Image (cartoon, rainbow, N blue to C red):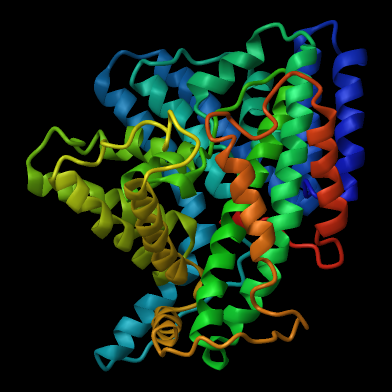
Length: 477
């Protein structure tokens, strides 16, 4: 079920009414409703994969209880290993099986061998990368003795399958979200108002910016050899705002929806395109994933408390694994490596945590130095996005080569629109976000502010892309 669909527009009010007016007497009933609603939400895509979601929940719930019964370190490590094996094994099979088979075949053929392995037609379960990491946080934190295991399976299963953030995050920690299922929840009018506003803002980013940019970016990337340098530059700019507004828009809708039920999810984006270096960019982009890798991969490897050589190793591991998490293609691995290469000089010069505040915190406009830093950081991000969006490494290099061929003519696309036509909408978005950069999101206020909300709704109706509906990008991850 998509957030930007009629189905969800009917589903959400029904769940909301049942939650607050029918099942509001007992916390257990509310949790049962959330669990059922979440399984309906997920099963709307393909009910067959509900068994996978249920299996992961049962495995980690059981392992958590068994881990609590023993203080023997060897036994606890064995149980943690079992959780990692089951969860990452399922993720690896569904997401990476054909990738490894195809690359093994290519390598074998390169050395003169002949092999005909069996590739499988595997459907990637929506959200498996997200809920796998979410449920792993539960067993890892129990192993680290940062969390007590729950004996309430309904609450735990609802935590794993919580429908607002099930298929594309934010990737919640068990230490943050799980306890909320066991505390009495009362309707909070202010939170509900903020939640509705956040949903509207997320829909604006998705329908007005991301879906319009998708049409242009798809056309330009699919026919990159036919376009001028100017159009190719615009193509990657459009993709950069497509992926940002698509993903952060989903996060806004998810967080806003959770607020309607008085749940607090973590912030997942903090205006990343206002970053002054690539380290700051990654503190502001997909925060739930970057902090997951920091806490469960980078720090266990030694983090920054080791030698410089090992620090570099740790950074490369985290960025490359993060890239591979996004998809079974070498382009994602290269994208991760590119970000690592730009991050390491900051680490080696101890400048990776220089920009921890908000840009132009005490003024309306940034300084020239801040503008320069912002522009250079955005250019680095654009360079990486070419590899992220390209279907192959060869295609990515062709695209980059096309940018430097020096033809800056303005072109008409097959969409019967000029290549630059979306720029005003993007500038409006940037203007709104710039003057809201100290807030969680631009409409973040419990006050009614009907004019602002009305303007955003009008822009959705006037400029929204409704004729060509686009799936959320991160569904494929």
